[in-house]
Length: 193
Image 1 (cartoon, rainbow, N blue to C red):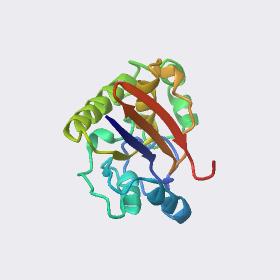
Image 2 (cartoon, one colour):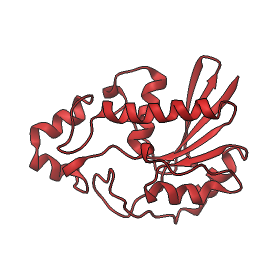
Image 3 (cartoon, one colour):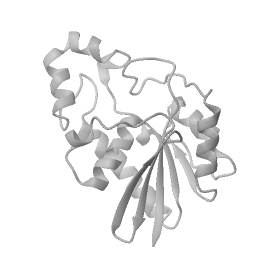
Image 4 (cartoon, one colour):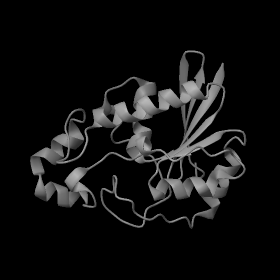
């Protein structure tokens, strides 16, 4: 059996900082990229999105005639707790040591009131594995967030979290994971590439 999981990072937000679970607005003015995604993605695939508006409104923009599954809280970005909305520079001023460890030693380290990388990975992997079991023969399109997509890249590559933390995942880019029997193949696409 061969099927693909298509991971789309939402369009650019209208707010700077670590937005995490903040439900900030989205800029959908890049009509060229949205059209490219709509044309590139398989028409028969199912679409599921994070419940945060930057992802769900992006999913609306690329859905076309595809069937939409309910928005999903488990596809939310990493929860940054009290760091939400702050820039990395502001966080470094508040929690210098913790902020360095958070980015350089991801795993069980959490922002105050937030979740760890391992918490995020567990949450996302559990949801994705369950959805893949329910829709075993369907291609799936996920519209989600930077760290969420990184958890799936980490899963495919089988590497420690620190090895994927600083990968570039552009807004409105496409990360494709193809499942061929027990093999996973990773591809990354951007309309400008």
